[in-house]
Amino acid sequence: MRKEVEEKPSYAVVAAVQVPSVSDIEFEASLSELRELAKTLGYMVVHTFIQKRASFDTTGYLGIGKRQEIEHYVNHEAEFEIDAILVDHEISPSQARNLEKETGCPVMDRTMVILEIFHNNARSRAAKAQVEIARLGYMAPRLREAAKLAGPQGRQRSGVGGRGAGESHTELDRRKIRDRIAELQLEIVAMDAERQTQRARRHERQGLASVALVGYTNAGKSTLMRALTGSEVLVANKLFATLDTTVRTLHPESVPRVLVSDTVGFIKNLPHGLVASFKSTLDEALDAGLLLHVIDASDPGFERQLEVTDKVLAEISADEIPRLRIFNKIDHVEDAEACAAALEAQYPGCVVMSARRPDNVARLRQTIIDFFQKDLVETELFLPWSAQQLRKEIYAGCQVLAERADGDGAFFSVRGAPDVLARLHEQIGPQA
Ligand SMILES: Nc1nc2c(ncn2[C@@H]2O[C@H](COP(=O)(O)OP(=O)(O)O)[C@@H](O)[C@H]2O)c(=O)[nH]1
Ligand SMILES: [Mg+2]
Figure 1 (cartoon, rainbow, N blue to C red):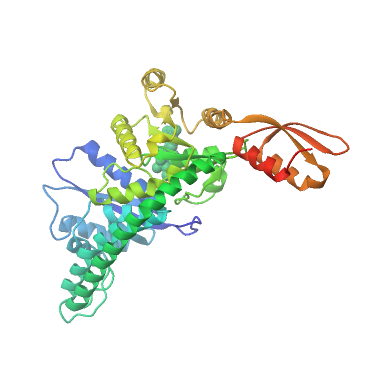
Figure 2: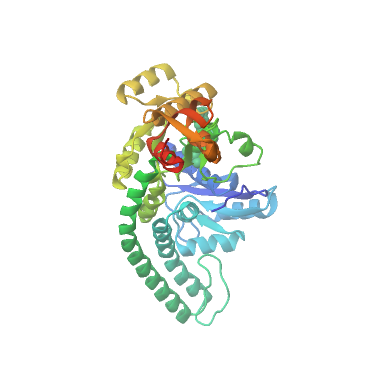
């Protein structure tokens, strides 16, 4: 995972062919999603090349004229050094190679961009294994292509898919890939058992209040995460924000302390082969005590997206976790008031808001805190003078309503999560 925001941005151009069966709206939506995905990987997209064609060019995906235009832009016109051409389709290994050769610039297709994001976001061992299977499956045919172009006696290195040596090498590599995939698949089966224990652990951890943001790419998850955790300044100072899915705490801090984590977004045009790895990267959300399902209310397709999200969450057993539906970007909706009323009627308990409005964010923060505070209980703790080192822990773990002292020690009236209180009682020992 890229933990630090990089100082030097990478620059990319996007290229896409629009075939007649694809409407302008669909085409634009897919392009803007690709740009968002590119941003997640740390690319600044500085130019987009589009071409309407009856079909994809078999040699280089785009027509020869457009390829030359890209070549000219990349090598002569661009203000920055272009690090990658991002293509908004899954293209064949030979199309990628030809495009690379002609432009002298590395090419990444949509599938590879998504794989890279999943790779960066896989946390658990099962998720890592699942993503590696998808990557190997993507690589295998590209190795073949590399070998074909290099020729039987060719030994030169060539781009996508790593080394492309002689035929025999490729055979070897392909067998290695098959073996590795089989091995990973066995590992995943073995890890299923582990996941059951993980679930038990999740219940144990419920004293630690945590929320996970889920939803489609571009819904506003990262924006909300920054707004809720007060890390806005930190990010805004950088030239661009790469993925930063580290867990942060709700800000200002609350009792109980609430951890907030971002997850990898759902993708509208998710290649079929990547479904399993996408789901596996979501398993982090299973640890949360509350899911914030963020929906872009200004996206005409939001209802369909909501259904897909619900379905996938059910498939990974995340439907057992309490969920708050957040209809975001209401500032971007035309008849906002009527829309909000309709949403509230249709989805009782939902939050309709804009991540750009501080008062809305403050209200959401309070809703989250209320959710976790409803399980809190009030109790009295007595801390003898001999155990004063625990005083800090009391303040860290609970809300202290009152504190008074006498000759033997200090009394605290506190409010806290039952398990936190139980642990404190244990640490303090039998009360006098
Ligand atoms: N108008 C408007 N734009 C928003 C809002 N929340 C996020 N955005 C914008 O939507 C885009 C995607 O947001 P981001 O947080 O990266 O979405 P993510 O993919 O879900 O993490 C960014 O350009 C944000 O500035 C909102 O409430 N209103
Ligand atoms: Mg994001």
